[in-house]
Length: 42
Picture 1: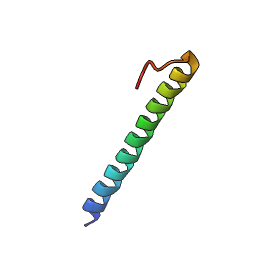
Picture 2: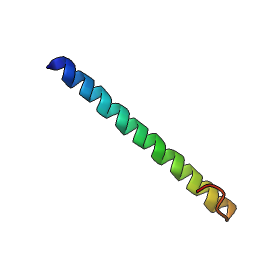
Picture 3: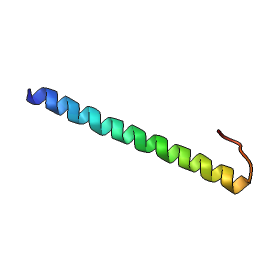
Picture 4: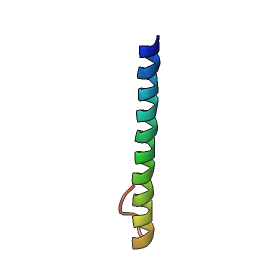
């Protein structure tokens, strides 16, 4: 049971990190589009 909980905690942390990285990427692309003044990346 402890092994499963450890695996689940690892999985949850990795998903949170992946979502944060995706958010950072989209925010950077939106900032680039705003700075340039036109849509370069969707």
